[in-house]
Length: 160
Image (cartoon, rainbow, N blue to C red):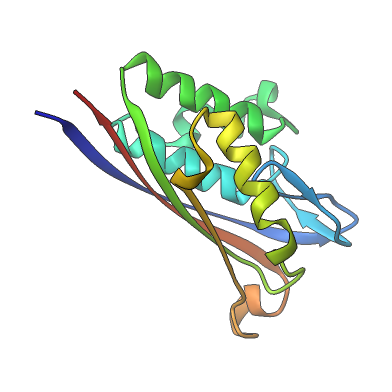
């Protein structure tokens, strides 16, 4: 019998002029970036939360608290690799990741394949197991006004 689990993750950050914007481990050229304790990569944070939740390991804040200076300005790719290691230590296999980034601008279409390759390399999975979608918020709310970014991720993990 295969043990199969589903996890869901969400993250959001306020955007501010003069900061760097990281989405899925890639620096996206833009005049605004996320305000956060780490580098503010909302997509990676949502994926971490989804993986941790699926494995019953609580959430990203439990493992990488924002009041711990060792995570100040940390590259979120490092958090994703540490999360992957926690999953693998418990003999879970990542089956797939389905993620959506909600951002009014810049358009992420030119970067989606690069993001997917970066995540696949970090997680040691085939790129066809990762789907990255980008949506605007149709000018509605904080995200629609260009004040923030949000990301959602659903993952499946399994073991025999």
